[in-house]
Length: 142
Image (cartoon, rainbow, N blue to C red; front, side, top):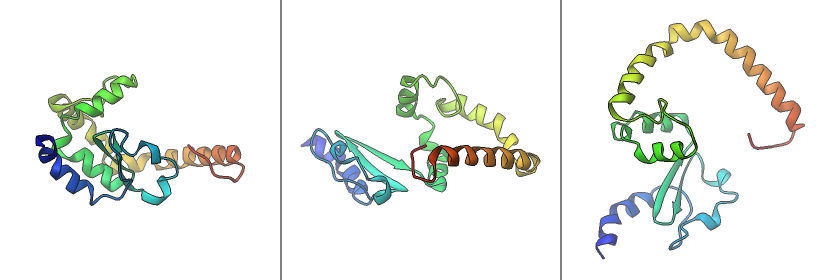
């Protein structure tokens, strides 16, 4: 009973996110195939009793990563550490993350990025041409 009362707010908020309804124990793992076109750019997935929310819209990703509540990102760090991602700007937390973000942010000023537009364009065209030749005009996963 206490468990249900503690999670009531989570269930209420999750009901407002498009996605699959979950089953006890397995969550929505049985229904994951073919859901990307139907539910994205934001989708909820129940994995057992854990709610995962996947966002693919760049504005939503920015909002999540800029949130002060994400500074502790222990779960994300554990997942990426398990994948051998090591320490980086995404996996750091708290003071270390804030320090490194302050250090790296000046390199993303528009005046600096404008100098690299030609390089970005050249490599983007090369990448698109490579993918086009491999896809043979069909659809495929990247």
